[in-house]
Image (cartoon, rainbow, N blue to C red; front, side, top):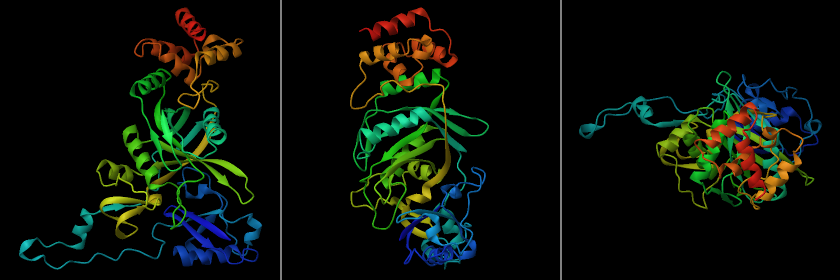
Length: 417
């Protein structure tokens, strides 16, 4: 049985020779040999919350009984086991600094400490700047349902997350997802960004007291694999996420991944995971160190650098993508907007007939409730003044106040067109 051991440093695959008789203690010894973390320093769990900062989640149950048989844990081939350990637990540590010989008449004398100070060091970021990310249930479901039923997780899909940031707790609340024009394949989603449409989206968000807070994308079931092991995000995904986090302009920016986990019996479960790209990752992108030209033959598990960096205690031109990922606790909530209107930039564009049908279905509700849907507001905004009308209309939605008669007549006339 092959188990995937997920740590903050990456993912390793370990083969358990006889899973029917193996125990947790046997697994720990296999991990010690493969991952080079001594058994006394290992903390194992089947809950991914083990890898979150201690302040971000309640302590998960640990696999603390070495005599417990693995067969009692409902593990199967390919299952994840999460491993946590102190930062200096792995046996492969960098050598201590030592002095260099003088550089002669052509240069100045430098010590190893001087050289280290000039090097770019890539280390794991233990604590995210975003304390937690909560997703509106209806918005998240509408996104994953389209990918599952219409795209069958065969191609990638992406969207921008909009919502609110709690200034005190640093929690992000995602209330709607805007899906820009895009072209997706198994490994790449290219955003065909429309500046005018994004201006309308941002105006709507501002009127609702919200802003852009992150990115969400799916992973296709047929995505490129790595010969060196499992990976959470590919080099292309790391590059795109770092670029958009740098553009996002807020420290709490979050990147969410939606993927289909297929079990041995062929059944599939949709999973949401949330991360931040580490501060050093975003800095490497901004400074032009992160390679932006990615060849088809590159290992997707590794991000190439344009200059040598220090990662894991050694000089390298490639960094395991997991070094750049900072896990974020994820939850859900019921936001202030509905999500029943056809979503923009999908296979079948929303027509005005959809607006009529939507308004008719909600006749029993106050008019402001009938239009409290971001995707409906985006359709209407194309016919409004972004600087005057959109703020006025979205203020009504935000406050759930009466919509002025002029706007009601305009929307009703659009629905009848």
